[in-house]
Each structure stands twice: as structure tokens, then as C-alpha cells.
Image (cartoon, rainbow, N blue to C red; front, side, top):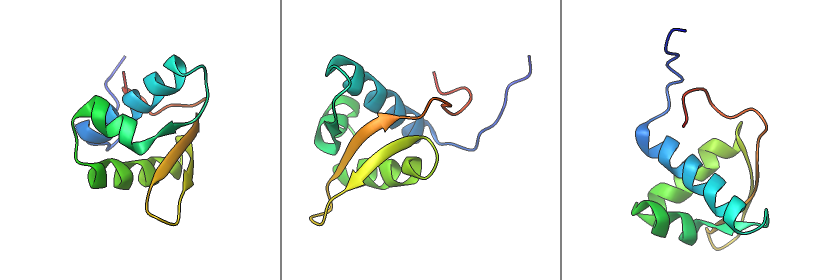
Length: 83
């Protein structure tokens, strides 16, 4: 099987994995962008930007008026080579 280049950066993939892990460890409830930033060590603004990007195809998000982003769920079709 050939590698598929999905065009996602390593940071984006790490944020997706951290969101998936946070949801799984929290019993499937929502997780916050702060929790994902803490898990990845990335700047909160980068995490928020990548979550909004991923929200277009791969995750369900709830942007808040104050700029925070909550992750509500993960798509059943994750990006290829994300693991």
C-alpha cells in the first residue's frame, strides 16, 4: 500500500490525535482546546486554528464567542495516515 499524502502538517495530525484521545478518556464528552494544547505542548492559538481547520472535515467543533473551541466529536472517517 502506497503512502497517501493528505497534506496535513504534523502539528495538525498531533492535534487531531490529542482531541481523539481526550474525547476517549473523557467518556466521549466534549474536550476543550486548552486540554488539547496542554496535551500537545502547542500554543493555544495554533491549537484553535488547527481545530477550526479540522472542523471543516474531520471533527465536530463548537467555536465560542471568546475564541475558545470545544471539540464535540470525531468524524468516522479520519484523515489517512493520521495515526
